[in-house]
Amino acid sequence: MEQPSTFFKDKTPLPNPLPQGEREKIYFPLPLWERVTDLGMTHYEEALKLQRELHSDVALKKLDELIIITEHFPVYTCGRRTRLEDRPVGEDIPVVDIERGGELTYHGPGQIVGYPILDLNRRKMSIPQYLRKLEEILIAILKTYGIEGRYRQEYCAGVWSGDKKVVSIGIAVRRWVTFHGFALNVDCDLTPFRQARPCGMSGDQMTSLKELGCNISKEELKEKIKSALVEKFF
Image (tube, rainbow, N blue to C red; front, side, top):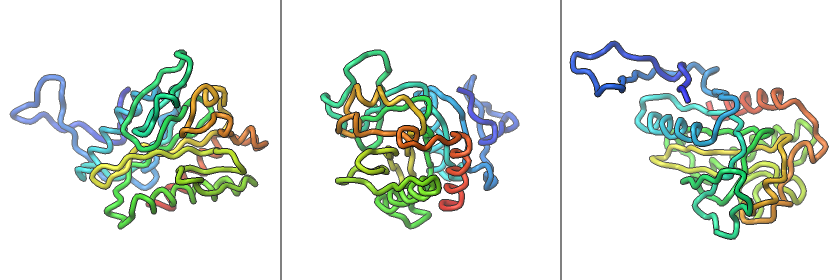
């Protein structure tokens, strides 16, 4: 996937050029309104590759912090704590093992997925504080639509409404810079959750805003999430 051009521009070739096929990149501070970048619909592994590259650049102080918003084609992702019995029973949807914490989850159309790439050391913020901040932001947004969300249950990060989970959160932190993030179920098909054990629990415990009776514009909700993330983190 081609990298968004706002992240870098090519530098004039040097006297001793880099190996063929590579070009040196120069990074510039991002304006506030470009700190949240919407990639639209993406294949998970392409977005993961971009995320890792941007994480490295932020950690090396070559790029400002930023947040990726996207929506994925169907995929299961398995964090470091995923057990064999949690994995899906079918083979129709790809499964990707990744470095984030937590267990298995599903991504698909109808979800809003966010990947904050933030320097926690710069913010003097611990990992638990960062997780709680993410939860608070999403709970506040849901409340504007009349949905009462609550914090994680039994040390399971995310947002719950009643006894069902509507937002999954799983992060990784390297050199005190975050990546991976959250997935909010808007109007996605919940069937794939029920063919596995998301977060090590029954798939029936996953819900969506649509299932909760909240039929809102995904684009409108996405704009609210972007605005809230910029306000709270930048």
